Length: 125
Length: 92
Image 1 (spheres, chains in turn red, yellow):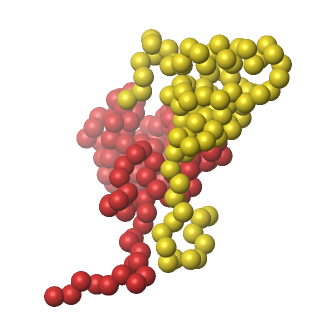
Image 2 (image 1 turned 30 degrees about the horizontal axis):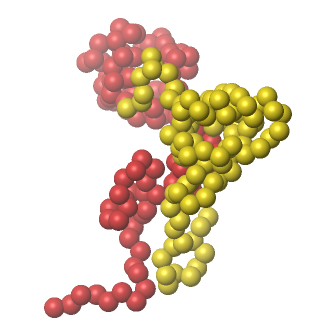
């Protein structure tokens, strides 16, 4: 078991894939990290030496924003918009799409499951 | 896509002149404007703008955080009172 960036314990997968289990690391960043540390793509996490794991940890700490830090940053950015009273903030407050999408239909990701409208008759054949 | 940096921020020229005038007059009066498309610049901080929303001028006190946003963002053009029927409080 390798513990990297706090809570993440990736498995016997390839390093490039295992790293993407960390919030804030996608395929691209994972590849970049492997390349910079000279870890071959075929290597699996269990094959890594302690030294290599340590170097991954150091690199994540010093150069990337991951997990809690990243989540806090995102939350702070949204909070800033909400406190500012600008249009984007208002949309965040109401849980509606922020970037000008239509809300007449769809927008279910932001709005959540459809709520039934009181008094609306179901169409029956 | 964001605006090209080499163009600089977009501001309607008359707004700059007006801001300067209010600044030098030392009186904090509301600067009425229809220019919702103008970017808020650092030199606008502390001034109050009345941003037109199609019906009235919404007073906007410019703070440091607002720099880089547009005036229109602070003056909503639509009013939504919610749909009829569901009387329970909805706004959080």
